[in-house]
Length: 157
Image (cartoon, rainbow, N blue to C red):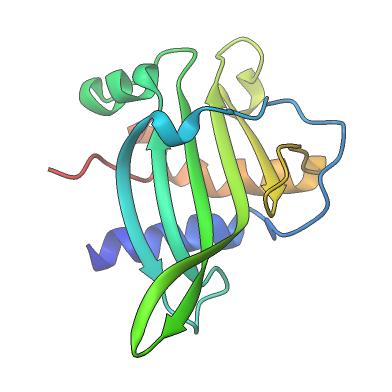
């Protein structure tokens, strides 16, 4: 679990500061119903992390097929939702949404980035958009997981 959390923190940190303004140049659409999808992982990155907060990972049905098969079919979408941590009475609670990171598989459209498109959004906005250099940074980190179809996380048993 610690290895997974460290890898996930590295992915998110390397994939560019996901806190930024969204732009209309988004190549991946906002997945409005993602909170109805399967939750594949959850973890809390500590305050010393560049991506501190609660991370919730969601996968649509196509992505679940990919987690089980080891190769993700086109149409797979994985979401990393980052929430602030609110401390109350010695307990940690989920706070406001800080950002959302989305990766979508389309082998033809994103051939140059291993078949995956990468986007991000800030706060509660449903608008996604990342500069090309941020998308490239996402891919540069995810390429380390080429043998797992560019995906770091695995389904929790």
